[in-house]
Amino acid sequence: MTSSRRTTAVHAAIRELQRLSEIFQRRRVQLAREVDLTEHQWRVLEQISSEHFIPSMFARDNESSAAAVSKTIRQLLDKELITVSISATDGRQRDYELSALGKQRLAALRKLRKRAIDTIWATMPESQLEDFTATAAELTARIEAYAAKQDKE
Image (cartoon, rainbow, N blue to C red; front, side):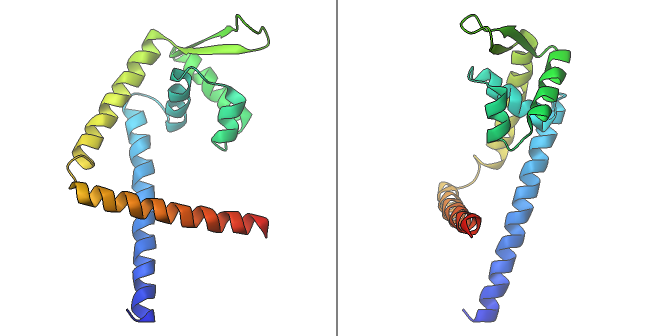
């Protein structure tokens, strides 16, 4: 492959990755909206459902501010999707749980997500899925290594 063709191919791959990233994010927003949530509210609900939710850790891990997480928690409380109580083991901590309505909402969202996965991903030939996974893993590792190198400079 000539240098010019390779450059064209690289730029085409970057464009397609950008399109994929954008549509993937747009679909997450659409899925959340279908059950009257924002994408951020969805992420918080998922984390609360895991029973290991600590707002400050969620903020750090998701590159979000503590204020944004607090606002989302208030929104979820207003929608009656979660409950908050003082921890029985440590009065300085709060326990977050999904309410019955929150569990229903999250189940509905997961059902919509599964339907999308079944329609989009599960119909792809296994060899294409394996190739995509390998390529995505390699690309992710390369980008992470490059970013880490840039952070050190």
